[in-house]
Amino acid sequence: MAFSKLQGKYSIETFIILNKTREEAWEVLKDFGNVYTWAPGVTESHLIGTVDSGVGMGRHCEIEGFGGIDEYVQEYEEGKGFMYDVSSLGPIDKFWSIWELDELDGARCRVKVTTSYNLRWGIFGRLMHKFVMRKRLEAALPGTLKSFKTRVDSGELYRPLKEIPVAA
Image (cartoon, rainbow, N blue to C red; front, side, top):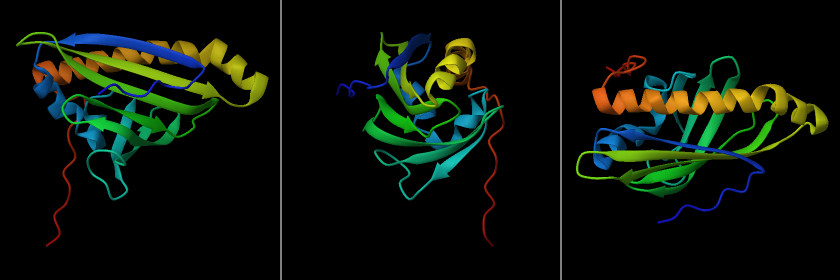
């Protein structure tokens, strides 16, 4: 399955090679609600809505220094990746992200992330983007992928998994 072409005016794409199979990387990636355990900029995350897998699955994330966003999966291919949209944040509007896993050989895979977005707030938003936001996004995405690689390759968590209380 090829994911839809992202429609945003601006885009960023990067990838990293993992020393694990695509199936092993998928085990981490598909845990959509617990992204905070490996993504440094996400201080809190949890599933929202009634769908816990596939198209329609949603999560709420608290982003360090920015506030909260909601993300909903629009396209999903089990074991290979997904595309989700992200609620507006600051000058960024209509943000999409695709996470794709490709098997390289029997022991490694590649994760590629493509983001695409539009801006709001007219000239003010474009200036914020030019002088602040673009640089932050371009720096954050490779860092997030490095953390994902650490999580997949070593099993090490960036933040501990929170225990969910069990009703008595």
